[in-house]
Structures are given as C-alpha cells and as structure tokens.
Length: 406
Ligand SMILES: Cc1ncc(COP(=O)(O)O)c(C=O)c1O
Image (cartoon, rainbow, N blue to C red; front, side, top):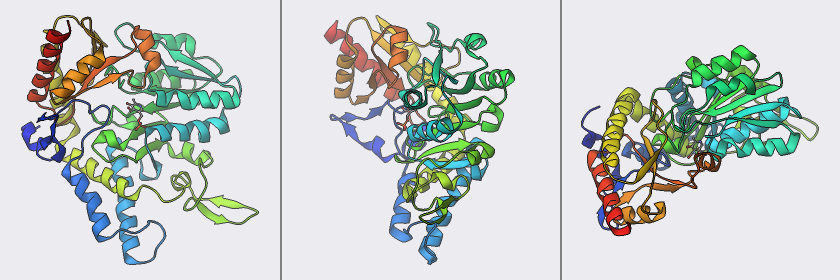
C-alpha cells in the first residue's frame, strides 16, 4: 500500500475536527467512512441520469438500469460468485432475515437443528429465534474459548442427523477473531452435504480477499456501509440452485413475471428477491466502493491494517490495567479491552473530547459478552485510512483517562 496519507486524502470527513481536535476515527468496524469516489458516483447519477430501473424504455432509465446492473457483476467478481447469484438487500441483517424466512420457513421443520456460534452478532441470532418461534426449530451453538476462538471440535457432537443449517460469522466484530470457515464448511459438508451453510462476511469482505467458491458455503452475506460504501445496501450471495429453490421473501413490483388476482408468477433469482424500487443510488455507490478497493488491492488493505494493529497493540500493552478480550492467532484489526481503573463509558467520553472515536458497549453480541464475563468492551477498529497518529492520539487519551480516573 502506498503512503496512507494518499488514501486519507480520498476521505473528506477525515479533514473534519471533533470537539475541536483532529478526528481520529477508530470505529470502522461499526461503519466505514466514504471516499470521494463513492460520493461522486452517487451525485453523478442524481445530477445527470437519475431514473427508476428496470422500467422505462427512455434513455435515462436505460442508463440507470445498466449502471445498477453493472454493480451485480462487480460484486460477483469481488467475492468469486456469479452475477445471477447476487441479491441486493438493505444490509446484512436483511440478508439473514431473507434466508431465515425464504429458505428456513420453506425447507426446515419442527425439531430440525441449526448451529450458530456464541460469537454471533445479534443479526445472526435473532432472525433464527424468530424462525424457531414460528416453526419450532432447535438452535445449538458452537462454544467460544477463553481466547475468543470457536471451539470447532464441538461440531463432533453438535452435528447430528437432524442438523439442517449452520450460520456463522467469518470474523467476529467484537473480538476480530478470524474463523476457519473453509475448514468448518468442509467438516459440515462431510457430515452431510445437504446441510446449508451461511457465512456472515460483514467484517471479512472489508479486511481481505474473499472467495465464496473456495469457502464452499451456500450463502455469504455482507453490508455496504462497512465496505466504504453507503448505508441502505447489503448483499446476499447464494448458490444459484439454492436461490432458485427458494420462494420470494417479499412481494411487490419488479419481482414478478405476471400478476392476476388468480395467480402471480415470479421472476427468477436474483430478481424475485428484490421487490419494489431498489436502493438504486446506494447500489451504484457500493459499486464505486468496490472499484476503489480493487485499485488499492485487498492484500494491501490487509497488510496496512495488520501493521497498524501491531502498532496499536504495542502501544496499548504499555498501559497498565487493561485486559484484552480475544487473543486468537488469526485476527483482523479489531482490539477489544476493558480497564481495571475505570468504566469503559468514562474512557470513551474522555477519548471523545480528544477527537478519538471508539465504540463501547456489547457490540450487538450480548451472548458473547456473557460468555466472556463482561457486559461490554472498548473497541478500537482500524481501516484502510487509519494512521499512526490516530493510534497515538487514542493511547494518549487512554493514558489521560487513567490519570484522571484511577
Ligand atoms: C459480524 C456482523 N454481522 C452483522 C452485522 C449487521 O450489519 P448491518 O447492521 O449493516 O445489517 C454487523 C454490523 O455490525 C456485523 O459486524
């Protein structure tokens, strides 16, 4: 990766101040800042050729439709899938709800078992609990070790004749643990190859190159706003035959072939899952974000983030009284900790006054927090624009908090 200042210049918000201090944005795992190219791509369509997609015969609608549909190809290339396997949703949350309802409600029945893990984001827990309440499936969980890793050997007893679905995160948003998803898929499929596997890639597509074909899963989901794209757009990748076997999730315009009061027929996947006017502008913004990342190269993004992660760990380890949560050997650039000398919210408030944005709380992972015996953590997360000054400011702020609070 070239000098990080070149990339920082692409992100207008990084020139802003927060509480009168230069912004040190260390909350990228929650939502990433947006480069100018993403903003310009969205402004461009609005100013020059905006029209609804898939509907008009006029020139602007044709251009909008082409720009929108091109992104399907970009996303497919980015994760190693096929264009017809990319469904645009609102976010990861909607992608998982879509699978739980359209696949789960159709193909699972009472007493069928699904396996999640203790480190899932609520987005990969609650949709399955709703399904459990609707049809009586049984939810089992892969435990997490004290180091914040999946206890993969538990699959030996968790996988049974009744297992129908496994849904796991690729990278933990709270701890940064990178899960061995390819090995897990191999293990699950060798138990029975009709067990479906969904991987929540919300934190993974942003940190490294992902190849869904290599992983061997059936569904892969992620959200646009963490990938330096806009909010309001997410992706569900599904194996085409599986998507085709599923009924629509929502009904409305654009997802039908024909409608009468007696009978309605639907388009093929992916269109049958995209009812109503889609997030046209945001999808085009997501395409620009993917173009941007491809120019930099995910390998370079990853190398830069890991360098900064090591720099941050070296600095934070020098602060007395911090307990780090999650020490897996394979980790993304996410650091979670608590301090013996103050509550995390007080630390975050002092950091805020110093212009440093970090996340505190349960990170939408309440079951993981209870497994770790805490009710939340301070989380520092690193993105492609993070520099050593951001980390220095953060460590300085934490030391100041220690002086004031201990
Ligand atoms: C691992 C993981 N899964 C799911 C989500 C939910 O993403 P969204 O709120 O965009 O649907 C997040 C966001 O924090 C996440 O980190």
